[in-house]
Image (cartoon, rainbow, N blue to C red; front, side, top):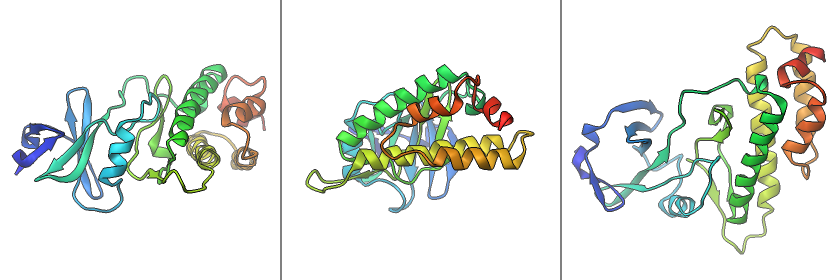
Length: 220
């Protein structure tokens, strides 16, 4: 059965690959310096057309489909960059300037997606990780809109990133010995961002002279 797969035009035997992990509705295989995501159903992931559109976009900090996977000529997954486990850090402890640089780079890639009418939909804080840079690693439910649809995609994406960053910060802060009241105050402050202000600029103002997010919240 594993021999009926092809990655674009290349036949591939999944039975010979190691299963890295499983998720609801599919499996992840290790493949060279990448991974292959295989979907066992037709729900909760991008369509073939959406995956093809995403695969043509150049992005360093938003991981996008590289090559499409087919089973008996039916679209069922794709290859994707793999985030190295080495170098992963808690975002709240990353030096301010380094964190701002990583958010700036991520927002630039998201702006590129916005210009292609792509909305970064269906993400939670587990899909945003810091590894010597900030990366979105799961494009399974991104939405690709038609060019003639009047939707302010970049505004939506900036808002989505704000919610993602806020959720990630709060998740990490809750694992620290920090008063819940301070964490709640920071959450309310961060989510109050003006929708037209970038997360990079807004976080720069919030952190101020503190070395990182953790130390800022400790002082609140």
